[in-house]
Image (tube, rainbow, N blue to C red; front, side):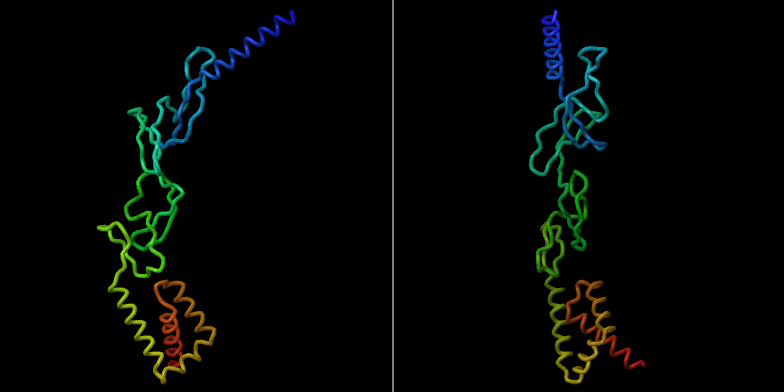
Length: 205
């Protein structure tokens, strides 16, 4: 009797294992159709061989994505397609170069690029015809001319007394304000603006 029970148990175990092995694979996707993963299908216990398919699941196998790609499913046509996938990367505004994380799969939105502004390129602007950042030579020249003008201002002996004003904590706060709120200003330009403000305040006391 014991041998019969053991034999029956072994047969049942083999049947269950076989049933689990034969369960088809279903492929899952999120609310927008972007591929999430795969798993074994749930089978109906009342109707042998019937697959219980959940929401956002399909038996259609997705294509193999390439680099920076993922699959997206169209439930209406029951077809997969490959789309760009740059999630977890940084994209940069072509208007000001500021970075933000890519959160959704798909093409990079208009007004952004995956190319960062080159280090040290203070006067770079986005050139859509070249699909790259290029330096604005006019802006660079104007800035250099302004820097030279400021340097000439500080070289004037009559303005040397302004240096002492910058030791004042208020002047330092003003200079810090310009530096933090106007990142395009150089230290010399912030220095100049703070000094001029302090001189104006002194003359109007």
